Amino acid sequence: MHQLPLEKAGFHAGHVHEWRLRPAANTLTSLSAGDRPASFNQEKHFAGAVSARQEHVSENYWIGLSFRIPGELDLPALEAALLHFVKRHEVLRCGFEQLVAGDLRCDVMTPAEVRLERTDIGHFATGEAVTAHIENTFNRDIDTLSWPLFLMGVVVEASQATVYMGFDHILCDGLSLVYAVEDVQRDYAALSEGLTPAPHPAGSYLDFGDVQRHRYSKLTADSAELDYWRAFIADAGDLFPHIPLELGIESGRMYPAVNNTVRLLDDAGAQAFERVCQQRGTKLFIGMLAVVGMALRDISGSQVYRGFMPIAERKDPRWRKSFGWFVNTLAIRFPIADGMKFPEVVEGVQAGFEQLLRNVDVPFVKVWELLAPQYFHLRTWPFPVNFFSFLDYRKLPGADMLHTWQPKTIPESSHSNTGNMWFLRNADGLYLHSIICDVPQSVDAFGRYHAAIVSTLEELISGSVRGGVTPRGSGQPSATL
Image: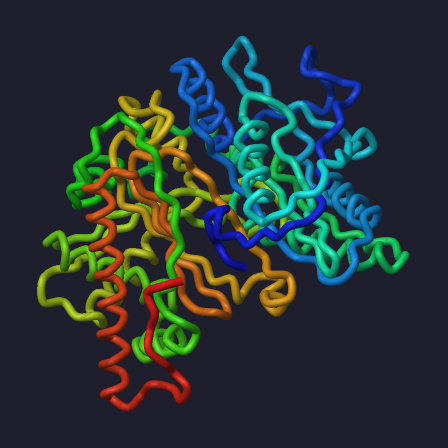
């Protein structure tokens, strides 16, 4: 898997077909037996969309995917595979409505009610035209406050086809897109051979939301479960960890965003850095966070790293391969004082992460509501925050098919008031995908930040080479895609 902005996703000329959910007989006009409460994440996301509409804000936010199917496409088999996919995951069959009492509920279509409507869009002569069509369609049609909340399509070429999908964030997280690719590819392979897909039940995200709500329904600002967060606030001075860089951004204002992906290390260089981490008895993502902290210190003078991390909530086997928004936000703190070398910083990251894991289940939306109520009405962070994410796609389904399927996740945020960094490892190397504000001072600050990360990686790898421990076949890191 790879994570890229849409314009780098590599679409080619071809004939386009698209599918949308067909409206069911039941509507949101009255409660039905299948109605469910929304999750904490969904409720906050929906409230943000309502605020945006009330403010007459025109912004585009969605997450998409694409993947290749080699050979001549069996269009009926693909349509059947997509139908299986929607039926398998309950959250894809939801619509949302705010009750007068304030609760957000999900109106759920039954699997028997699910129908897909296919539209023959026609032929596009260039990949650029296909990309522009997908971007315009996603921006126009994917909206938290409208329905359906996703659409699916395919670009049919002579010797291959490229499937694409776009989802409102209220339906899913980025990891779910990996499982979506596996679902559809597996079922398509069976159906194109005239076979019935094997049943692969998936736990419902709506059940996850129910479990979470019941567990934390009585949480208060004084609850012991929030001790970790109260300690973080006492140290940081705020629930939201400021990024210690001058970005030229006004608090409370959104700016057009720059969406970009760069390769930090090729596969050989990434292997060399992994060997450095192994020498210190730590995992790749711990080592990467240590590098990020050291780089931030070097350009800002900060002596303590404080930041947010998204953490997957899939410990329960029921949710392991489910489609939904199984992500919590956690805060981490560790020292990065002047003079601290990589081994010392790694020790601090490990200690901070172990403490984080002991508090991983408390929903951040509830933390925000209870411990920072002055910000809870906002639809996004109150100011630029420090944010780090890491995902090793080599450990996920379909990793062995990277060069055949060419799967990609495609996040879109037309506006931002911060700077988010997602670090990604796949068979081709170590990458950084970032979305930052298109403000000269912000672009310059993050450019220096990213360059410092590359420089720190290079120094660690070159030190490993001088120590004679670099594995055979490692090469020089690259800072370009």
